[in-house]
Length: 327
Figure: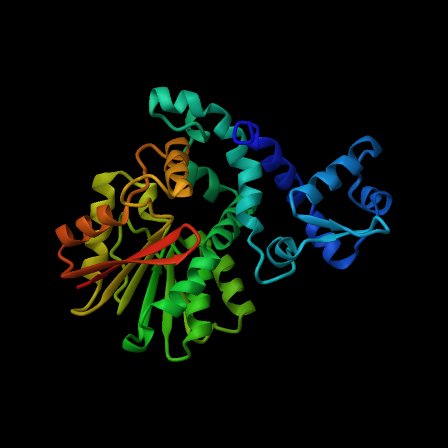
């Protein structure tokens, strides 16, 4: 029952983010009445909504009936904090929630259930609208920030000087690498429309001197050369042939001894434990014509077939792991 009705809790959280509840409470803890007035909540709904979030451990309520953010919500769902990961949840609310209502159809047809149903394309739809594009890129920061910080700590960056993050989105990975390692210089590689959003984010972190944007299309163009190539949440968007093509382009962009880092919510090799990785693969069914997620063993095999002489899998954080290939 809890699993089957899980969308109740999910949508309650997503609506709280949509209403900016956690950002508001970070500045102004309040009562049902003051919060309801600020967020324009109907009196019939306000108390149950806020208390449901207390029961879900997203909010706390004291003995004077004043609501505040729970520690985790305050850390990760306050839009004003650098640790904000709500961008992914904003996208889940606006895009993924309605599309997942057609999962059964996707399971029976194997076809996407997003904009493609009306003749569109996920990336064309996202990149065509400036506001939607910015939201999508911020969502990628939300889903990548924890992994980015783990990569900055767990990979032996002292042995390398340059990097390129392929499909860099807003720039979460380049920024975290440059913040953690002063000797590194690198770039984010993505479609030209991403440039102003990426550059603004890099400038906010005072890294414009060491982190640059490189425009390009990884299907049509070569990947820029660097000591380390990074692909995060990229390979799972594409079919098998396209995956192998991207791995080959990464291989060609590296010097001898260079490294490729692929990170995702990798499915565990036994395909029994990492539910998020498996659900992410179903999300690729919803969102793409041929994309799918994969295990660490799968990716290591593909890397070896591409020519990488050494490969390894290393856990990052939560459901995320990286596969490292050495040329």
